[in-house]
Image 1 (cartoon, rainbow, N blue to C red):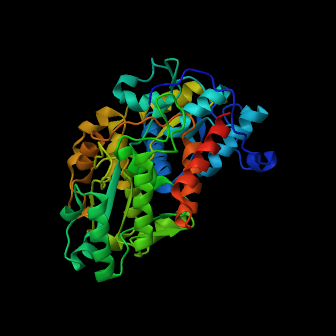
Image 2: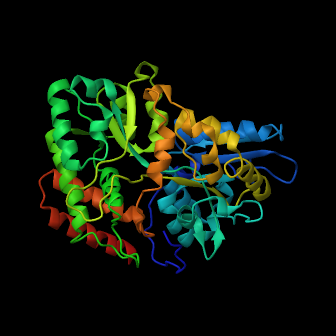
Image 3: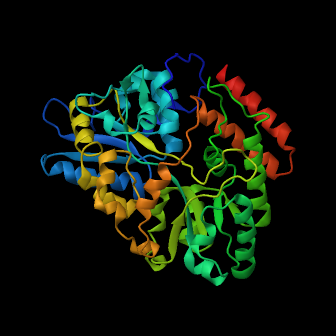
Length: 435
């Protein structure tokens, strides 16, 4: 995504009671939680996902402590759906002293936050971090006017992860689900369901994640090159929604109400697989009894969309240093670990599936190591190859408004609404949000 340099002056106010938003906040660099000039070597961090991001932070802390034994991280688990409203509320009320030293930011949300709330961020020093060691397309998310405000962390390359024992019961292998179309997937998914009783996929009702992965696999988007919404009359979007509806209607894809329920579907043996960013591997590997029963492959492609591919992405995030931080300590910590430690990525890769955006990490032999949980498959070398094929698309500064509007439209369409009418309404809602 190309950096957006024009100031966006119209924003969507997220209404959240200030006391609710601030009540759980820990102090940043100038308060109780952050490092300071008096020799305190503590940094406070907001991040989500204990099995992935927080696990990576804990390993980074250990590595940094090798040369800085008094260093400590105070990590506050903060789901993204809570973190964004907290940042918005703090920015709008100028309560910057309530910020942590470091916070994690979804890549797709970085541009809008940096444009609308620049006082949340500290600049990243190019003297401390060699940004040429990250893909340009990834650093662009957190770069404004050639100034860096984030250090990219993980790759969101999408995978289809399937239970090989369930496929075998229906007479299939992972190869039967490799380089296929969604029509092929639906035919085989129905067969697996009929023979084993297992749906192959699951997801949160009212979430557009699967739709967005389908779109990016074809290089398509909800926005044009100027950042304007293209939700109405979007052929690729219509094809993705038609496919998703067929998945749900056929029983191949089951919808649940929350993220925890979604994780439970494959952790608790309710479905035969999942389709998501590679970071989902950390959750999959949490059930020892399923070791050796999984494999990964690329994603199905849309049948009727020109330039459709079998490669996509979902997610990806970057570390930001707040305006309330001990900037020198926070910069040195991030530069020494997430932008400078092969040891860190060698450690977290097999445990959590944290495929790095820091390019030197990819030279590690850890990427080619067989993964016992996935039947001896060298999954990370395959994911690295997938990542090189993911089409780029323009997410726009209003990505989340677009995604949320499409999510609402999908709920209507699943309930029987006419697709064009629902998408026209979604288009109007995004245009209104953009002013």
